[in-house]
Image (tube, rainbow, N blue to C red; front, side):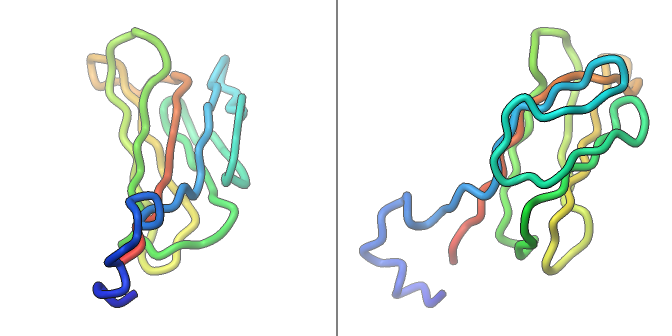
Length: 114
């Protein structure tokens, strides 16, 4: 999109919600509690999950936010798998000691129009 064509557009028009979900991980099973825009979720091992989007998108235009559900300390990260047109996101979740651990989470994927 030509930068001049962005003039006059609202902030809402400059970003598009691609996917949003509440993902539950209990006893080694991953399920969507709520979901829009994701096709599937799989658990490779404790704390390692792959989510697949409904459609492919340019990896340079995606912005991902992932947050652990609950108050237990730890760290969660999201990584786009591949480059170019992508549809997979890898989630890595660890406890405070850096040990992979299953924890439910929220995820949002935005596409920036530019």
